[in-house]
Length: 183
Image (tube, rainbow, N blue to C red):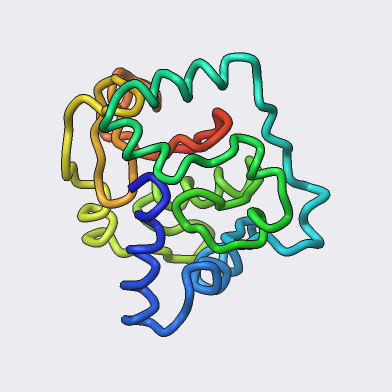
């Protein structure tokens, strides 16, 4: 569900709240924290978006996934052109699991709020119980796409092999192109 997870969660949100994921994030997270974070990047923000550089090892990584049936289903269904995130249509689309756009300060403030129990500068994103539920381990094992141990909570990756530093309770998410943020 590398791509579809966000659509599944977004539809639950839309049915419960009435808003699409992009509007919810803008109104409940980005706006109150005064950060640049978008799901569905406005065209005026394109100038700030980094380009994904498709490097010489990209074909090998895709070929490796192609050779493993479960990885092929998870990451190559459909097969996405690695340069697709550089296109306006991709940036504009609301693909919650794959095209959130932010800068380092925005991600630092969002994860900073989570690291402080769900609130920052008088803005509460989550209550303590909700944050605890969102970061509770849901599954752990060998991840078939990357062939490495991973653990997941409800939308967050958990700290395995100190990927997010030495804290055993750290959580976050790694993104396309090597970006990641954590608390």
